[in-house]
Length: 389
Image (tube, rainbow, N blue to C red):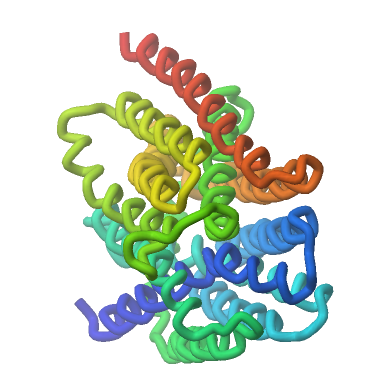
């Protein structure tokens, strides 16, 4: 393995870990913004469409870089934009903070898919395990985000948090400038191999059903990840250990579930795994919405986090298996659908909460989402069984 590739892998994994913190940062800082700007739940929900609209734009920009075989440049630009976005969150103007979340979203939308593709191309013989390790790094970042914010923030300011986070992201992004780009020949070879594939993916209803599944599920993940910290503040009681919050438990068991999934796949196929995960998520959400204390909420968040962990990658795997390897270069609608779902779900929770005066009512968006996913999965599973027969 060339030394350049080892260095590149290390930097990419560090940047992906940091991007995990940045991605879920929104849910941890919203209670502070709500107090600082005296915002209603509806006004708080505006931050989510701002960040996710940026993510859609970032995903589009990444597709343009992909055509020029330049995921490395997209990763660098995305990292710099994340730095700019999180630093703008310190400006004492509501509108500027919204712009900060928008810019942060563009950075996330460029960085995450670009790094996934770079790692995929650097590990053509062991792509599945390499991507699992990479996304494990993201999950660790998501886990440490809440304690990180609690440690370095005050009720009045997140300045120290954003500066401490921005500095290593900027350094990691700039280090990518010094990486030799000879690995791009791998990308060019892969692109050439795909040129002969002409499967009309987005003319087939099954593609849009899989995209709809992604829209609803990513909406669920973003909704619970974005609002769980705020929802925790509305309940009575404290967790058994102060820093072990429901949010931390959700992301902790989300990562644990990613590790347990390969073992479960030895006994269950993709369709059964998806139904198992959705069943656990439904159970967890029933506990979450019926919990009257933080301790009960922690139990529900733990179950939901474990159940949802393998759903997204399994659905993406279903898309690739359905349409073949060339689907990776025509999957933009799949990921854009997920981002739209994230923006819609997080906003709708705030909208309903504002209209009813109860965040608990808004959180019912999540349990309805899980029920829709179960119905959709039963239909997709039945179709797969008919084809197999």
